[in-house]
Amino acid sequence: MSGENDFTTRTNKMNTTGLQGNWEEIKGKLKQKFAILTDNDVLLLEGKKEEMLGKLQIKLGKTKEELQKIISEL
Image (cartoon, rainbow, N blue to C red):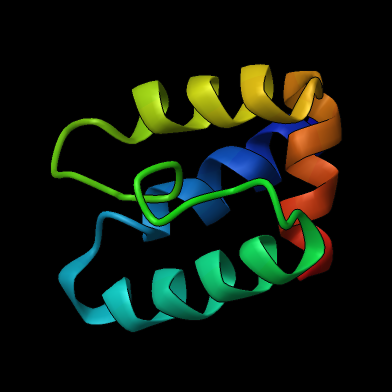
């Protein structure tokens, strides 16, 4: 699935030092779109990206694909 590859590529960029600022923008937009999200929900810790994304899926009641679409549209 190319969509999944796009999601993987986009989320892999979150761990890249040069694009950390990009995650700051994305998490701000996520928090605006979903008022129930807290700073802890969108905290990106080194090596914990998949765990954070899984928690977002559960908290928002979204599938991986739905979350992928949301992030790609931000």
